Length: 164
Image 1 (tube, rainbow, N blue to C red):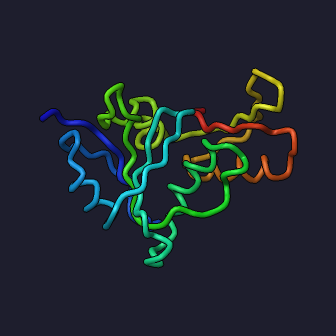
Image 2: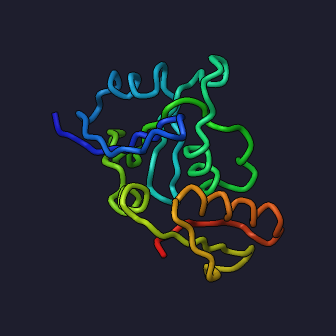
């Protein structure tokens, strides 16, 4: 069985995210990470899949602010409502036959190794991304800023966090 890489995003804010390696198709490992049955959330904009606890809300697991910010900043504006709860595993999206793939290298680098970030927005009916001079020291603070900006500026259709 081949190995793939993923990123664990703990719900506890003081625990760091970490890059992990595990056997492709090892659902038992994923269930251990999320502490229960899994729910999958695809983020095509960044080529990733979030694996979270399907019953996180019912079990009253701790809200995972970082995973929520990642999903909200990469989903349609109307999907930004319910926070993800519990620990999350980020992998790549499934391949052509449905096998889980390695987290995209660009996303892994951005989340685990980059030190300076900026936010770009795309307005409705535009293809160009726009940014400003603001810089952030965490991916999460940049995503939060972008989401707050999008909530105030009705013309924002999408946001993205990139290395500064």
